[in-house]
Image (cartoon, rainbow, N blue to C red; front, side, top):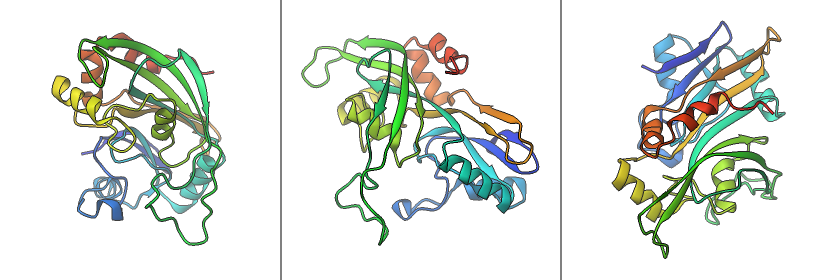
Length: 249
């Protein structure tokens, strides 16, 4: 049973667990469970995804309950009308706050195919970040005798494919558990120390103007238990709590 965070006659939001695909994908052809299918069966009606979360990312995922609402919300996301916030556990100690302004191409792998007629020119991509907590563990990874990690809040302004993951790799602070853009040694350390088998990235908030009522709507969720367990083990319980109470600017 999926956790329902919000529902009205036009929209429904769930707390997507890590490891669940939003919809069927050729990249995960073996998967048989999808958020679209599970939510449709749970509600007994058709649902329309209006944005995406990567398979490994947990958190707030929004659907529309009719085509009109789906079209309106898809445009809202495309035009930057949705404020998005994420929490991530990353390698290293990033700056206390900053902005990553780094254009991203449609493909992140030279072997990846893009649709015919689609340009691969880099697209503008901007992500604001805030560092919430840091730690240093007495474990050697690479050439250093200890290993540094941080809890971050991220606010992507644009919505490029894998934007947060690629931006954090770009500034040399990849997300723990990211098998594509991260560091295997650090991922394995978190598996050994905390039993973490997931990408430590979670969408904690979506805020937007409701397409039918015009009311400002905020849908928030604390990170899932498997994310929170790692943060607690690192002594970041208070910092994680402050995430939902953070500044709006």
